[in-house]
Length: 238
Image 1 (cartoon, rainbow, N blue to C red):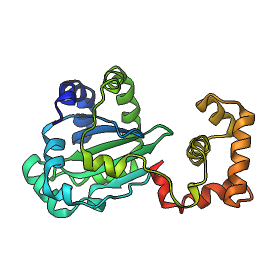
Image 2 (tube, one colour):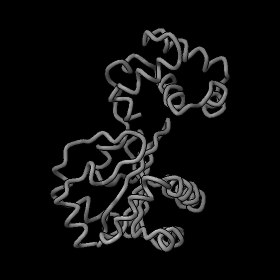
Image 3 (tube, rainbow, N blue to C red):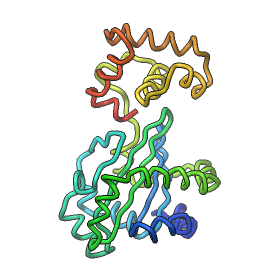
């Protein structure tokens, strides 16, 4: 099932080696979900995601909304399944980090051994270490990701359902795609000039999009827009 991606497992392991040795992390995987429904994935052990995707617990899980940020596995994965993972693969104390971008969503998973609960302190006090690793990983394996992007692969159907962008609803339904692109970047703290560079459009065009959204959403300023969207469930799928 995961064969097109498992051929890169050794390269992933090589990138992970230092992180694993220094902090006691035992497992890592990465997935990118595109709005088209396509998904690519890389992992340090291909047996685990294959097992996870085919397990009845996973198949029966209802769609979940994982907002951008960090989520402990124990917060959204049934404990019964985590116990099986602990016994079968010796993985536990996992964390999922989600990142949203205009055209895709990235998900990073890390886990340690069951006998290493101290890894939770790393998550709590030094999450920057994992964020730095994310950047290094994407840089070192950019050539692999670029290669996989050219292949029309869709894997982990249920997980794609959980994490890929879905049609907007509620207050976002009347916004254009370009307005939603601007909105996503605005929510990340980018300025209008930075958004213009990111989307390769003019600063004036970004300002027009923001003004149009402000009027449609009934907000006085950009801060109110971001505050309003933080309460909008469907925004987490963008």
